[in-house]
Amino acid sequence: MRNVQELREHFEKTQIGQLLKDPALQPFVEDLRQQIQERLSGSREQLGITAEDVAQIATGEVAVGVIHKEGEEEAGLAAVITITGERQKAQDLINRIVDDVKKRGGSTEKITIRGEEVLAITMPKRPDGTTGGKVFCCLQNDLLITASNQAAIESILTLQKQKGNSLTEVKGFSAIMDRCRRDLPDGEEPQIRWFVDPFGYAEAIRTTIPPERRKQRRLQLERLKAAGFSVFQGIGGFLSFSTEGFELIHRTFVYAPPPREKSAKMFDFPNGEAFQVPKFIPRDLATIGMGYCNLLTGFDNIGPVFDQVIGEGEEGVWDEVLAGLKDDPQGPQIDLRNELFAHFGEKVAIFTAYRLPITTTSERILIAIEVKDEQATEKGIAKVFANDKHFREREHKGKVIWERKPPETRAVPRIELGGVPGLAQPEPSDSEETEPLFPNTSVTVHQGYLLIASHFDYLTEILGLQSERETIVRNPDFLEVMETIEKLGGKKACWRGFSLTDEEYRPTYELIRQGKMPESETMLGRILNTIFAPPEKGAVRKQRIDGSKLPDYEVVRRHLGPAGVFAVTENDGWFIKGFTLPKK
Image (cartoon, rainbow, N blue to C red; front, side):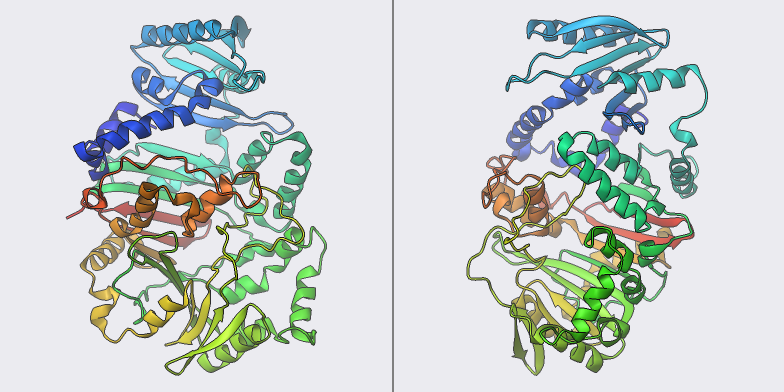
């Protein structure tokens, strides 16, 4: 971030910043601040300082990053803080930390690294009796440098002494920063810049998991690279608050330069200008995304990643699956490519809504895929589901709908993340079935689209829309966001998104307030249940935020304006730009 104080001032000007000052929200804000400090207590153990400490001493730019060199056993977390004019305050902070560490049984020593005096702090034992980590601090000119291991701080100090090998020389970083900077208006500077090397970060996270699992995670990463995904060399961009007339605006670039080989060819998102909303998109929704995607190209290139991830590196597994679907007498006997995917067009839409009153099952989702031949698509869908024991055929006003049968018992569903580095989760037993993405999936073909809904009742509601007055095209916020997208350069794009944030955030807010987020079947709830799941099979995680002090949602709603985003396919990747408008 360029300047901590400037960032804080700009954030406080936003409507969210004003919301956090609302007297009705203060009991929760104070309680949340205490909870966050408790949750982030590990930051003091890794860097010796907390975010609050940084806010007190920083006078300019602050950089925080994960540093890991190939071959090193441990990744390091490091921070470089500009303290111009506040060196004594920074020294006082270090002295307080040292006194606190010694009182709790830790120790310190002074060592020399690259000619600089560095304070090595051995943290006290943790409450569970395990050995505390080490922190390395150095005051150098107008900088406070702190890191969680010696290799990380040595890397930073080396850069201070010699040129070369800095982040600016990483092609992915420089390409991303250059692309986002080209989109900035004259005179504007971003408040926050960020960058992630996907495979580098995954490798760094791998060093934090138990040694017996590291080999498996490395193999997973190598398989993704072998499938062609090493083309993704970086993602990053700019983020600013209360500037350019927006509450928030971000510019992001996904850097994936050609040639794209094997399964990387799946990511085929043509740019277009025809963003007319399908007539069945309802006015009463929370979010909608619309865009172009060549699904047939995706299907034709999924083989390498399927073979690597599902087939564990064995070639031809995907072809065997397709052959089984086509030839197995007990299967659907469908040529999946030619009888289904070949009939898909390029347009895709995804929208979400919810039911009142807010419960753990309130969220509704619908995916719409353009089809070129409705009748042929209907035949293909019938083949897929006719012999599937989990689905049943239903009829609604002359439409055939394939509905997933309700399970006899319902557990809190979770998303299977299957090997995402750093996200620990219990290993499923051989007999345990993975919960489907939509437990109540319902599918039909309607008005030139294949509709896949999260719930049967929501699908029938969509089918029942009668007039344009009931659709999203009559929503003034939607029209304003679409007009803003075109002004910002998104007239020709591969994707556009719209959010009524006061509707989008309501289910999460209410469930947190009710203390029921761990039981939620919303998409966000499932992600949290996957990441924070307890080790006991079938156990429900404990909610990590106490929402009992939250005020009525109407206090929050008036601070949440509509938001938009668009993405453009470019030669070297995808440029994404998003914004939030002030609430009127």
